[in-house]
Length: 346
Length: 265
Image (cartoon, each protein chain N blue to C red):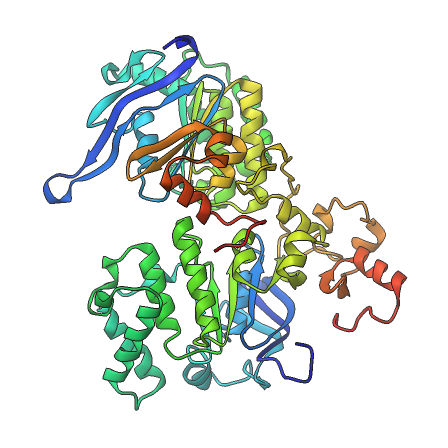
């Protein structure tokens, strides 16, 4: 993974702020970095308002006002796509190489067009020479893969249930075999059984190389446990911890990750005896985020130190095999051996 | 019916049919349920199973097509306007969609003050103000911050907490909580659950939880009812149902809920 092979997607300190009237700005995504390899599945978790969806927009180059590009880069196979002109980005990258399924996209399907016309619309936009019959044939195969019935292409989207609409959206957004499929809360509005089936299908799409890789955004850590290989936990516009599923779910390090994990309720024996952990306070106002660690005002870790955590912004450090943004972890790393500290951290 | 005294609400053959002819939908079918005093009963099912219709029936917001609801043995179908108001004094709801539950033209102050209209004898203005403040502090909201806001100026979680503070002021006998944490993040959810559980402990409120979240139901309730296509397919002590489900649907549901320990297959 960390070898000489170039990552498929490299996001480097990307920053996207919302510009408001009177010159105020919301620092929604404040320097997020990560790498994604082919066939990899990355989950992004966090509370609402932490910048998950904005990050997805930044990655796919969707800087539409009021969202404004502030800094950083997104490399797709080594090419920085943030600098590309809008037209090229639209025709060559978005939809074709990076496909973004926004939250509740299933409610945005045009109810007056048959699904096959939606299919043709998408293909035609990206490839003027495409043949309609071939495009629909491909859509038919994909629909079959997603367990959609035969008739789906000849009907209107409003005739289907939520789970089916969501699968139609996934079929449409993977028609052009994207390298990166970004799914924003694809399962949140669905029943557990449908959720499970959908997660299986998304994993199947990556396995069969229909989609090169998957970024799965959700507030539901339990689903990520089953859907992805790695999980990034986001808080107030930054990643606070990034590691494998096992590391994040069973051995979290950052106090915020710990609190998130401990608030999961699953029907497993022992849950009824557990005390629900509450994170006091509310997420910071991103107009004016705290100067030091952004989680400091709500942190109840024993290692919390006002003069350190309240003043200086912590960096991502490599600690016990994962990346974590916490002064306490950094100190432990430095104490153990000084060298390993900031290799991946930046 | 041995211990009738503890029985707060009972329904028999509760059925609700919407539409007619080809569009006929039986949303709730022959539901018998009992809610005993000082317990938490959860109604769990997937979307479209009729959970919310049951909640609306129990709150007398819609009339059942067949069957009846008994509150402490009284037939609620016979209630007139006055008796209904009295019923609502004792049975309150927290709704799924906090966006649609408040009058958008009223400030929070008025919304909370209007609760007192259900009281037989309302306390004086200053006591009202004090109680409203207490109620908001109870759910971790800052009274100075929210009292002069309109519902649309607040987040979903805040609105859901305003609903709980209403319940705190009214202190009903039975609280019907329909997906009270559906729009909320895991951490704030813990907050709301804790406020509800405290409320139950302090004011001896019986709670009827309606949710699709098996983990949540397992955590909070004493008794579990599993609903599918308008019918209750399994009921019993929560630990028994979760650990030893009998109905095939319950088994399926439990298999599909993601857990941390076991891999999804």
